[in-house]
Length: 321
Length: 159
Image (tube, rainbow over all chains, first blue to last red; front, side):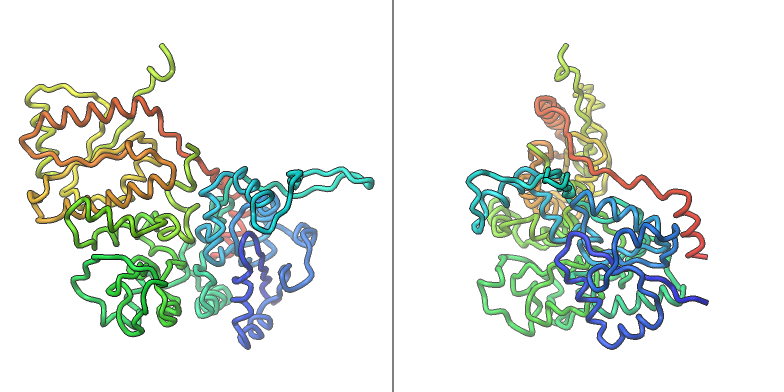
């Protein structure tokens, strides 16, 4: 029997997910021994035509990281879907839109104008913008279209499984590869991580007060953070109560609050709203003015609660008003 | 008649069982007419209302959402209404950041005896949203669905 065929692809993301694959360290040798890697543009020399030449469903599994922002990404996503039996959305951007998803707070024109005329490192008095089609002596050259908004992978193609995280924890990746190889896969659509909140596996759980009441918010740069005590109890916006576990709490172990990269557990539809519910319910005050003062301390609610998930919320993006 | 005049807002109202829902009954029994634009959903307590419900309603086509709970100090479950108040204040900030007019989501304390307040609040919200116009949330195109070849490939993979 021939080895299963696997692919990896990189859309709108920072490349950290590719690092996560390399972070398998020696275990990557087992992966390479067990599968044929037939597509991995980041690490090996494959082109779009190699994928086009495949039969439909020829690839057994494809790990796709990154959100969808350009017309080329959309086209390749559809191509990979057609050629792959099991598509795994790999990492926060692919899963929920990720950091690039925060681009949905701005219009396409605002982003292009900022990046090509106003950004600190840009000098562009003639306001030259990238063109999708440019005539050169040899003919026409094309660039992909920068689409109006960012989408998570499942807003573009059908996704079979999700491997969450920014980047996905290596242990979860190892389990996922094992599950694919053994064929012992959970129901389609499952997020391949434990379905409980991070607080439950947090090393500081014992110091979390039973009757936690929030009286003030502090930002990490404003205080010396106690290395033992529950971060919520220290007034930090730690998203552990609303975020899926499975990461081993590296941020908390690094003395920083959870920012929610693994997304929600299975029963939540909108991660940011659900997280806001958790926090707002814990405010101690019953007075509208005091509550507003506390709310004012959350400078950027969208960036705080939907840092990795804006496109996958009910609103998807900022309304153009 | 212009298009704006033809627009009739769809409003989803979440009323708590003990105060506002009872008040809405009183409004009806007292034959106080109000704008027919609300669809009332009864919940046991305003504290049961998650901002997810509110945004889900807006996403599914509501132009506005009304939340009715017991007056401060009167909650049947001691402090569910305070939980709603805190979520509501935070939600408003989120809505502002997301470009949704906060006047579309209104929280009111309405006691069981205040049938006239149900009438007034429903009317006011309906008129406000009639002026604001339909809530046109940006739509994200969804995947067209797997074609036949993928379906069979998947069935194979899962077999």
